[in-house]
Length: 572
Ligand code: ADP
Ligand code: MG
Image 1 (cartoon, rainbow, N blue to C red):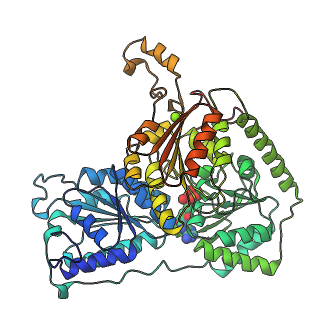
Image 2: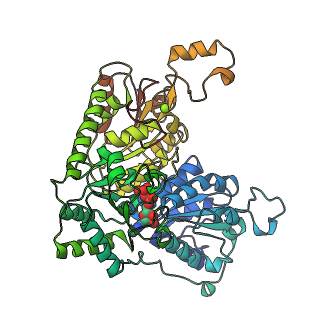
Image 3: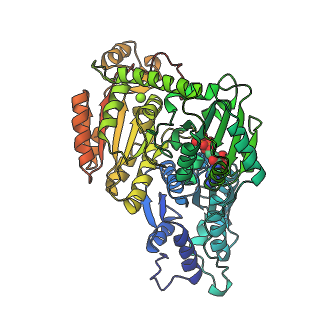
């Protein structure tokens, strides 16, 4: 039975279920097969946009990015067993990033369970660790109610993933209209504010600080608090630092942005206002030696269980960031306190910023070939539109790209995130392009990938071309993971015998022509080795707003980040 609303065979509950989904959900990503093909067809029939992907992981990354970008969950639709398992990576990534997501998994028929059914797997149980809700509706009648609960749970409180299991035999069942518990779609999350006393305590701590620092996290981006945060920064004269995906909440070129003095700002701040960011590895746990022993943290988060993690806070403001920053603005307007722009702290920060920017500039202007990362990012920065959505992953590519490529608007940077997941890029880019097409037509999506990161989901280029999404992918190709070998050294290595025994594990094939995969599917591919070739390819692909393109940029396989900095996988 194909669940087309026009189909006279469609039962009322099926129609109701589809309607519930359609009210809440705009986008579904997945791979069809037994037993979920009909669900995808039905979703399209009620106006949900269905994007068929090439691997469930990428589908799940895409659906989760929709949740972050729109505030309402996208759906990932997968088949039983292996399909579900592939999606688990995306489920975990979404929940760890605190992004709303709905995953619908087909599963084996109920009367074959424990018998060794086709693709049988304990999906509800396996889903429990990574989902806020992992559930199989007990009957067809309750499906709409379960869907409503899943959508609501994914968005309310700290957002995260919810899993709904649909046994294969459900797809062909019928029920009476009268027995269906139909539920209207849920309202947007209620908005909570911080306690008054906590707000005034926080303001007092801030007003007494000598070296304050505001840290903006992706929770702040998610809560659409950009206007309030910008006002707060300006009203109080506070230096601020965005975490990677919070770049653009306040534009990176704002005079109060101290991202270029990140380490110093963290290390010497005496009061930190933490807006929707966790004190996890990204922020070095809030502990010495990266922070002062006596740093006073003012923590603002929607999740009560987060408050006090790793550091005892000086004040905790439980609530929605947009609402709480409004409360802080009102409190500071009353106090008319402003941190002095002539303070020693500001002088120190500005000195450090100048110094660091000069070092990057030097590397960017190097003329030697092959190019280094800084030169590549310098040209990209010059030629891409200011309002593009940037997707970025890879080790050095993401780290250096983060410092070299500014963001000017909120929620326009997507990367490996809290889970450090490589392989998210193409799925994120597809989601961003779908959302941009509907909401901000003409806005470009530019996906900057390391060659290794690209490999995790490279076949999604076919998806990009199939849906004609004008994404520009730039593969920063150093022939490997972290570093690689040039073609000559590769040949030398092979003389020692079997590549599996003598080629460094970080190596990938030198000069791999990834751009040809794009041209194979009808997009445009460019292979570039020099700054001039890079500039030309960038100009051509940025001005062509219709065609997907991939620029494969060969760089020095031994190119690394700035010498003076400590080498680590991410964030120095
Ligand atoms: P980052 O990666 O930028 O450091 P994290 O993902 O670690 O950010 O932290 C984001 C935090 O934001 C989470 O602790 C989450 O609970 C919180 N959060 C999410 N949405 C909101 C919201 N609307 N208001 C307040 N806090 C939020
Ligand atoms: Mg690489």
